[in-house]
Length: 169
Image (cartoon, rainbow, N blue to C red; front, side):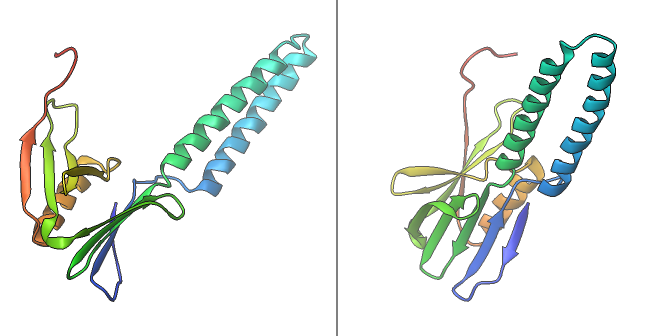
């Protein structure tokens, strides 16, 4: 998802993955699974199959860990600021964990076109010999929107085809 933020120094955008559910709602879903599993486990253990209890606990722990990991990955965000003379890219979750600050005239956009229909295009910001991937979590529609947004800011987009290493279909 691409969201424009207000900024006095220039134009600022926040790039985030699409989230279909909030953290409190995800916890409620997991608690619903716990309640349903508990009813089944109590019934099975009263029938004499007490060995179900540890496996149900392991299953709920695994599902909870998977939900937590997915929710954590969906909290990633990137903020890109286009100032009159600088371009600043910040990546992180709750606060900026990594930051790049480049002179605006030196920044280029590199678009790795998808080598296979199942893969997506990869957008990179290039400056001073470094390539920094930009918003790997965007869906293809948002990725195309990001490329057109970067073009509208006056950055030249260079396209290149990338090769697949490994088995081809």
